[in-house]
Image 1 (cartoon, rainbow, N blue to C red):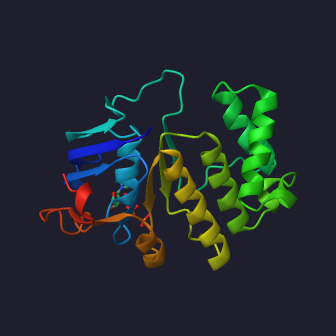
Image 2 (cartoon, rainbow, N blue to C red):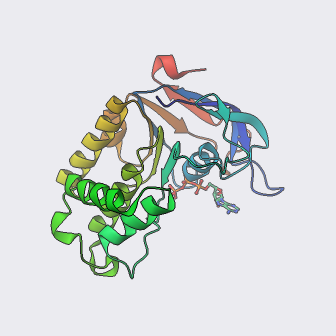
Length: 228
Ligand SMILES: Nc1ncnc2c1ncn2[C@@H]1O[C@H](COP(=O)(O)OP(=O)(O)OP(=O)(O)O)[C@@H](O)[C@H]1O
């Protein structure tokens, strides 16, 4: 159902030295890719380029066979990004945050409510559904953002450092939901510093270039069939 292909991708901010240089990776449907690397290595940059939010300087990103850039504004929810900073509206409740995004994506209000409640329950947040976000703990906010992203049922799911505030039990639950998403047919990409989470994934793309060593190859891939 979902696949993403990154081919010889180079991304830079303005005229600066590229953050990513010559990165290639394919994530077929049903697979989970971990994107690892030190702070500043370019994990968020890669996910944003995969989502079509940043233009390639060179190379391409292809989602389900279509170019990710320029980003399509047509209705549809093929690529979903769960951002590192959550991006929740703090004055709204957990359920309202999810409903608002679903309704903005052409889902009818009744169905949006049903889906929002389902995903909050799936992430262990039924008791928090009517609490405003600013009253939730960091980990509860992170799980709310994950529930909001998964409720969109994207064919490609990009999760940016979404485990950082979670205890071990919650991390396990979230990884299990990502596995279910992959089993549904999505391609899942998880940027993480967590070695255990990376080991749970089907393959790992380690970014080693960053801005500190821009002349070195940016990628190393562990996991055979994803090498392109
Ligand atoms: N909007 C921007 N404008 C200019 N430079 C940026 C911008 N966003 C990120 N960078 C730079 O790009 C590099 C990679 O940043 P990025 O956020 O992709 O790294 P990361 O691996 O996700 O880091 P972390 O693990 O700390 O989240 C950094 O040197 C950063 O300063």
